[in-house]
Image 1 (cartoon, helix red, strand yellow):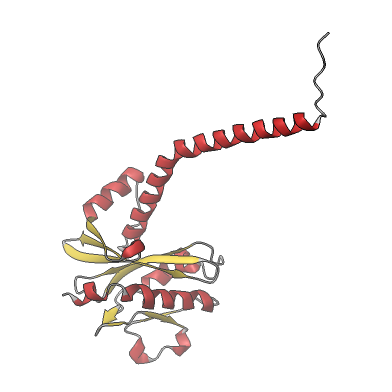
Image 2 (tube, helix red, strand yellow):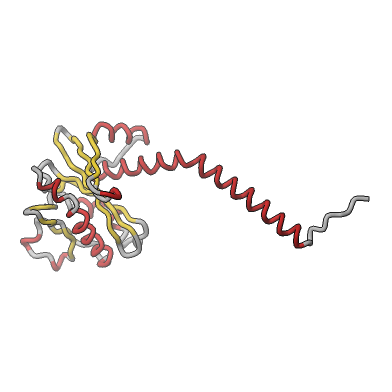
Length: 214
């Protein structure tokens, strides 16, 4: 008569656990490998949409339409610093040259980043789009969710006289002479907006040589 397997035995439990872990690990590895290419394509497409959003191109029929609009708009992409911290997208929009600058920094709870579109003078902002990893909904998250707030950047001076000019301040603290380059802060989001200010100072400075080259 065959001996009944003792499932309460320590050795059985250990072997069973090891086999189960190995199976799960191989399954997860297979799923990750299978989806990796698609995930990377989705990330790349999201970046393209954000670049276009800074140029006020935000509505697409589908992903193929977004890809088409990007290929029609973006002429070239140039990385100016290590670790992809300074990337310039040279674009053409309505027959005019635009330059989109990638910026990144830290908000209140995590990374923030964005794309600032400049006119051909490499000085005046023609559009902007910002994003975040974990800012507070209804407060700091407004840097992404409020198009009206992003639209305030249009016409502002980003860089002049070899200095980063673009900034964010509480409306009551903005002096008349600062209106040329300063945007009203998001109400109740002082720390997030401080992060946006630091992002401008640190990131736009990386483009100084490019911006000075007229």
